[in-house]
Amino acid sequence: MTECKSFHEVLREALGMGMSAPRPAPRSGSTAAGVRGGPRPQPAPPHVTRSDMVSPPPGAAAVARARLRVGPAPRPLMGSQGRSGTLGNSRPGEGEGEGGETRELQEARVVRGKRRKGKGKAGAGQGGRGSGAEGKPGLQQAQEAAGSWVEAEAGAGPGRDSEGGGSVEEGAGSIEKGDEGSTGAGKEAQGRLDGKEEERRGRTGRREDSRPGKAQGQDCQAWGGIAGTGAAMAAAAEEEAAAREPAARPAAGPALWRLPEELLLLICSYLDMRALGRLAQVCRWLRRFTSCDLLWRRIARASLNSGFTRLGTDLMSNVPVKERVKVSQNWRLGRCREGILLKWRCSQMPWMQLEDDSLYISQANFILAYKFRPDGASLNRRPLGVFAGHDEDVCHFVLANSHIISAGGDGKIGVHKIHSTFTVKYSAHEQEVNCVDCKGGIIVSGSRDRTAKVWPLASGRLGQCLHTIQTEDRVWSIAISPLLSSFVTGTACCGHFSPLRIWDLNSGQLMTHLGSDFPPGAGVLDVMYESPSTLLSCGYDTYVRYWDLRTSVRKCVMEWEEPHDSTLYCLQTDGNHLLATGSSYYGVVRLWDRRQRACLHAFPLTSTPLSSPVYCLRFTTKHLYAALSYNLHVLDFQNP
Image (cartoon, rainbow, N blue to C red):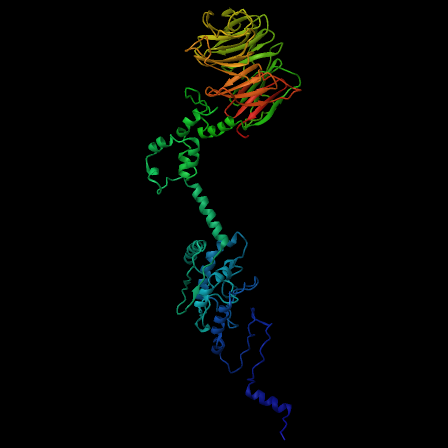
């Protein structure tokens, strides 16, 4: 029979032996010091020394290796601080030392891409703990990409629950205590350089080799931070820096690009517009080189309304030639956007002129000046100035020497200074003055009373008639030669002579007449000099005629017929290839290429109920303006 011991005896024996029996193992769901799944640390018995507590339990390194072989480490919790990844054997202060220095270098590589995106903030652990980075996005991707390499290097790689992507030590005994987690300025700069190199390798898909840490006597590997956001930002910064730099001549490439620029200009001058456009897409240096005005000048002279006259004079030297050629293609193809600038209530016969960024247009017995907005397709609604003085409608006016010279239905001529209130009017003809022109201080006027008169513009001689010419027919149009030696009159052609006659400006004598086959009633409504020896005319006979005084005065050099048999009220030319006319029905504006017989494009501006002639039209290299009975239209070729 077994001897029964009392409770007190058992208690005395236990106290004498020191209670060396082990405690039961914790359940799998418990946590220990913030490490998930690890055993709970046990209090040290009386006979256990501090060195025994520091040493890891047997087989801890093998367990860590086995966990690394299973698969990539799970993403750490956001709230956890940087602790060592060993199985419940890490202590405060052990994560720092040489392994902490490696982590700091890795954090410096990826911190730039995370600060702006808010993906996580790299920071050191508190209370002497190992430094860690919260939420590194590129760590798990790097582990998955290098899974086989991790198995080969069983003693290196991140721990199961470590956050900073730090090194895994093969034995806790080789871990040294210290507060060396914070690195100096030199180490931080070196870490940034290493991070840039590793980001470049990550973008090209190369496998990165880990950089060994600086721990003495340890076999540890350091993972470089891989941040996709930081790589994208670095690429954008490189592109922006390259855009700021001036386009340098390419060092490599065909030997053609290494020729002197003078030879390249000569070679490229034989290319057409399409070839130059494709060449500009090769590189930034060629884009700058092919934008030279010398290369585009020849193309611009062959284009429509590019600002070059037939003699090669550039009328718009302040605008790049390449830009004008682009807009010229819209004129050639008829691409434009229509709009209405002004409207008036009653039917009128307006006339207009352009000067710089201002538009002058007559409405009834007034002349109003408007300022264009920067786009050129709209006007400031409030006029800059209003010029009055006629008792009846203004029939015609011109701009010359900062003056406005107007002809009215009351038979008077008005002289207005544009930038002042000076206005003088005087009686010139017995009936309405249909046309007027002014050049070189000389005014010529034509009237319904079958006369043409010459007047001086000098302020002391205003109203003094120099010559009175009997035309024996109603004068509808008039123009002074650029040489200031003669002027031409266009009449109603109701007699037995030509409607176009040229008069000497100094003596008032008839010099010659143009044409010999005009039908009766083929009056000339508009005439203009293009050069001292060439001029254009249009009128009731539905033809536009081009005259060259050097060849023949009996027959025109070229003529264009209005296809709808309509009267042509006005015409305008760019001095080279483009010709624009205004018809009497439906407000049709036609564009002509003077190298062709047929009309290039037609733009009807009114419909049947409001059919109106185009009384006057003017255009620039970007816009065309047409004045009708009830409104002022604009055709925008710059922004079709």
